[in-house]
Image: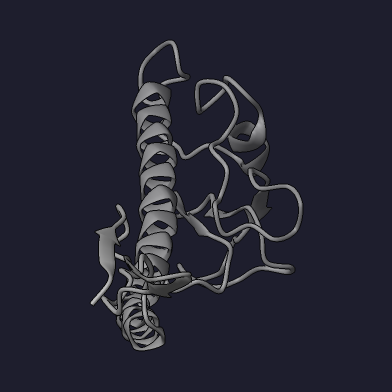
Length: 166
């Protein structure tokens, strides 16, 4: 046979007289990517995981709104009770009473600073006070928004359709 030589790629050069033949190596090349099946399987796994994650996120969001409303309402209710106790003292007039709607809505009279906002508000004024005289707790007064307050009973609740358990 003729003269053989090998190069770095594993190819073989065969020379027979004036004829030179290059024989290429048939070893497969290494691919550096993902197959279509691998990509589809990964996508299916992500979709399945997200089908569980999205509803849980929405529950966290509604729970956070409910907790914010409960906390704000609790702070207002505590301030109303503090006002009632103060009104029973000599400096408060000596006659225990709940604050009026105007007193509750005025900053620094009942609540230090402004009233906390109702997170469920949709009337554009999240910390307004609506007079709920004669209404039972949980009744929505007028347009939904702000806080409903009954000055006869001293009860306050979020004036919204959200089920707060208030």
